Length: 338
Image (cartoon, rainbow, N blue to C red; front, side, top):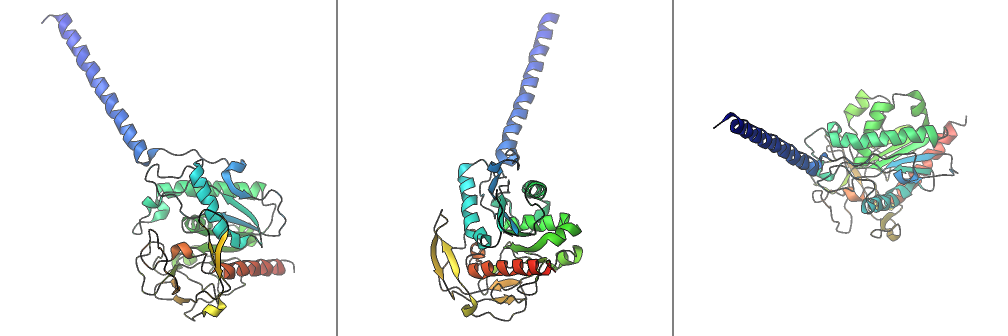
């Protein structure tokens, strides 16, 4: 073989090697993006399209900043694309079902955010350290910052959420409410469907548990389930719980006669399907931190274990929550007018 042939062979081998490396890199990129590596575009909270609701002409003395629960179930991308029309509609529907307990008392502000998929939920891991959770949380923090600077105008506010939305608000309270001004503005935080623990109260002393129906600047939290139900991924050891029927934190049972109305909505609409006064009672299980109830109807627990009524944390106690929001707003305004 002469020198020219040898050089040609070397060039061919080098070209094949380069091609092979590029092929592997391309395949790895496709695998990476196909397995959750692609990141949906970040919301721009100066745009109406990044909000489920932001009241343009607030006419009430108090605001609510609401964060919706997990609605996203796909494996890829791992974070929700807020431009997806079906997901936007799902977020709007859950907003109508849950946040409507606040409508009578407050102006509404509810951002879309790139929440993590339910496929990432791991009850054995610290989900607050999950990179996909953090992405959604950072969106909500940017939305809250925008709200404070451009939409709030100094009014007192309620933080409200459910499930992953409540997780996000716990992170928000931990990281940003060591600020006297925000503490003074906070009417209450309805952290429903996830656990606030003794460590939260110990490590973040500005996070205080509600102890009655009308205290302010406090956290309201509970997780609803049947007697004997186990395995809830949102019920952590030592979870704080307050009963939304009698607003007590001990095991004093609240009879169903205290239930002002359970409200159930039609699928995909904001219309009420049925409302039942005196629907069901409840008590706090201080061993587990769960809100225990025995509804007369059978319910689908969805992806949660049997008897974990996570989906119905707002529905079962709807009218009591609605009344309590009004009461805490009145209490806040009365105490701050003196």
